[in-house]
Image (cartoon, rainbow, N blue to C red; front, side, top):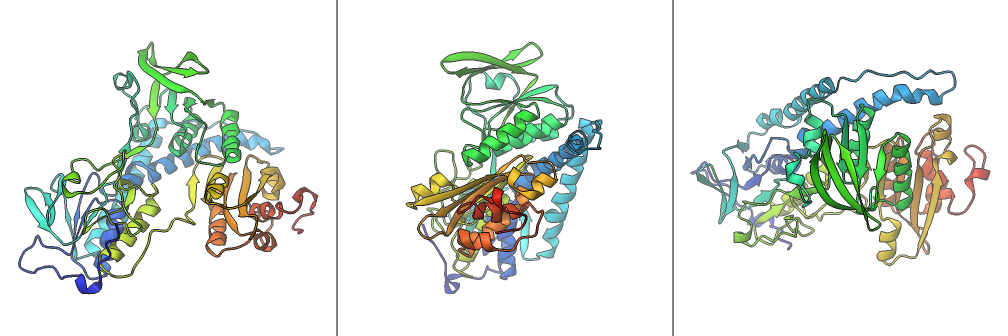
Length: 483
């Protein structure tokens, strides 16, 4: 699939036609803007064709609104959880759901302009085109009744929520993640279908803002995470009175008195779960239809995701893809990174290959769940002789002092070389901790070296040092900062 173009192959856009460009980018989200800026900085003329709302998933309906409302929910929960400290009385915060949603909408509008729309004038060689649906054709892209020409095209059209094929689901007006984050009135209760990172985040957020929540999943929560980490999160959610129903099959959905009825099967028996609304968080699907991919020989997988090589090239010469529309990682920072890889290769600027070996990921629940590198199962599948280290947060002084020991840290290392292969953490400050482990992986640190590194006392990140020491010793028998 590699289709790197050398600098000698790059041609300057014709000055005789306005519709000739060096590069066409279809999709104006994180990947689309990253690609356009990279090309513009290289002196190339770019046609950026809008697909959906400018800014894409992250700023409009994903990262920004969800994390804003999660933070609001954390503030509400903090009043009640303060009772864990002796001498501090808990307090209840009144929640105006509609006002929280409106404030989030205002923030989204501000961020969309600041980080996307208002940036365009700074790049004179980027022409933004929003004339309706775009379709790839021989030599360029057809949009708005004209054909825009360029020797290179990048597809960055993103993804959308996936609606599973469950009998009756289209009769109950199911909410997806976008719908829940913009719902003007708070529902009394919800069934959240799907125990991945979106389902877990939104279930806890809604619960803390006063909604009765039942989280339903066919396997376990966070099926891609280490079982110890997933179990720690499950226990935390249950402790907040979120009903967690796992290991079941979805049978059918139907309207019920005052809401929705979900029939599930578990252990050979059926049972009914009810709530006012059904929220579906069972993954996302690529926005790849109606782009003319099949006609140009651009291959996709079963979910419509565009297949790309390590250079982000598709199976069509001259066409690259990046972001959620591809079969790569579904994170906004990886979308921007993938677009940079694609454009550097397409324009012959610098030969780059997509590398996610030390890609950190975060689930913004409380405790936060984060990871980087290989899990134990993945490391064994890759042929490593594996050793693991697991410590609960009651071994981390920061957690003890904060009187919040929910969570666990697990490290994976090669038993022969002692080199760290990966790790995951469930902790209230796990998102800020994981980058340290990412850096350790990038520089090939051993577990011994991590355990001998000096960390500041009473920090969550010190837990990584303690977890590394746990490979060889019982840290419960060490004094503070010893070892």
